[in-house]
Image (cartoon, rainbow, N blue to C red):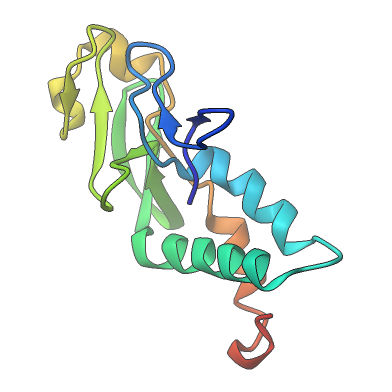
Length: 141
């Protein structure tokens, strides 16, 4: 998947606001993946990027969970899939960051204000997985 912000020439993932560290994010990647899945002239590079993103969503989905924005908590939610907002660039470890730029790995370590005023997790890849699951593996090109 892709970063939230990228350098315009090197394409290296960059930080944004203080809590938006360099990362990979399934939220923005949802839009890129959707565009590439529907691209008319799909080069081998586009095919590789598209199905690589779909595999990432498959491998990192948290089943039966959703984010309660008002409480700033992950809750049980039958049939829903969840992904966190930020993942390390180097691996699939999710993280959060408070407005003071402190990177943490547990929502409970954020201030209440930070937990309840930012969308730290969502079902961004669910529709992609629902739609691509209809495509047999041999036709994924």
